[in-house]
Length: 113
Length: 117
Image (cartoon, rainbow over all chains, first blue to last red):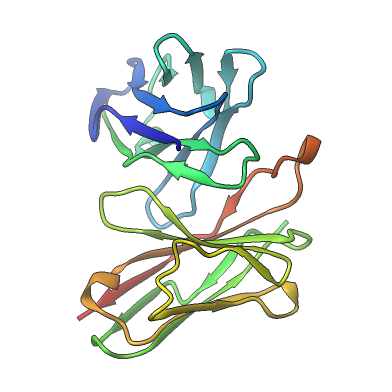
């Protein structure tokens, strides 16, 4: 069975400073991992995905994540936060076929001006 | 390209009343998913369709929940009767086949926020 743990329920950063959203996963086989973002009253949007290729994955809007098997982590980072990044972020692991997504509880990112 | 469409966006009902949610997936996407997202939690899969066939409904509470996907396009999720604990956001997603037998990216609709009083 797969599971994900998002280590922070809320993260607050100032505009222009780095963002780090932490995620640990558990999987009985090589996982596929994703980060989704959810803006208020909008659908979930895929930011990036890892599917056993390069361990450093680049996504949209300047986000990236690094797959670390030894640490079972898949943390999301961005060098410089923008006000428009304020949203809820979900770390997700899927089964080996990619059709069953297991979501973390989410991290709410607040960006202060 | 139009995204996944869901209606209504919001619904408030009294407990024990029935309620239905509708989803129109992205054109050409043969896989359709219904998720439930409780407050402060991530979405959880309720049911997955391949065309008109429900291939994974293991998490669907079958005593009060039902779903259908006639003609393999639009889908309806129904709750009858609704309970207080059913208050949540109900999300629909769709995907097309991905590479090497895997499933492609899931695209999500905006959801229906249900409040049961």
